[in-house]
Length: 98
Image (cartoon, rainbow, N blue to C red; front, side, top):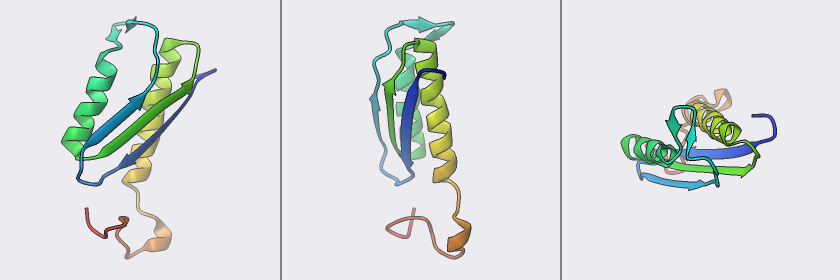
């Protein structure tokens, strides 16, 4: 990721929505077509019925920007599906249902 910073938030809310804020200059990174980045995350949000928010705050390399977005997404997803050990019998939702 080097010089790049990205952030992500995921809410498994049952209401699919996806917002991506990034400006990647390249059309392709290796074999990956950059325009498919948004399609992937939109597809995930629809299939998982999740709110997905991604933002690349800065970065020089298109490769590093894409890498940072996927890493931020993975960490947010891991957090979204994890239970807090301190809240043993509490469903992790503000509405108490998923």
